[in-house]
Length: 291
Image (cartoon, rainbow, N blue to C red):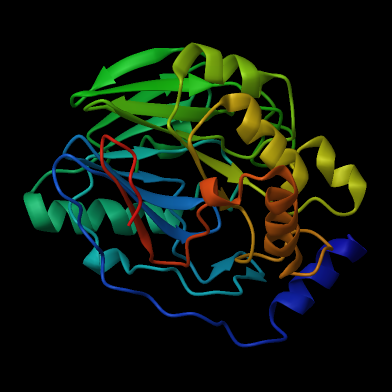
């Protein structure tokens, strides 16, 4: 409990930094990956717009974010599908989900569909999504021209500690000859190799923060472990996430990127790593060229 209050206190010591950017739309044949902050992304693939773990709120109960979201909800395009990796409050934020639903309804008169791990359906059933899809590991659905597969991870899914029945996982989203993998929260595990062998994602969104003290690595990857997972996946590009937004671990806020860069340099794969600023969009054509 003392550790928690220390994190809360430290999260309020400095003013929030960063500023939102205009949303950048991609061409129909491009894959667009926009980093919103923490583990939140806007994905544009095969003409569809998806949000993964959208968190736009200033606070998670008492814990305040350190950087502003990279885009504003009101400037988002109409969202087709929301993907939620697990029920933790820094990934499933009720207030943010309600805002996304209202914004899409205002633009189109309809609301997004949502994909959740099995056992999380009840948390989102009254928010106003048009359809709720609950998946278990390796379940695969066809949704609006996309193939969405829930992937394993090494984490936990309870929202209030005792509701341990709730699932958790990552996703591979494929369509139009392109694919992207969002791991969700995870420690390093052998599953990276299996996911790569079965689904062959081109782009991997992998977490690099909240790894210290070392006991945190039972559920989170260090930067070095994230890079090991990336290599085992066999993906062509990695975008880091789960750092810099919320003070969740005891490592310095700037350390994850420093360690990521150093290890990528050591491994000779630095050109495959794309560090996105909040609100920045990476464009990928079918031939995997980066702008």
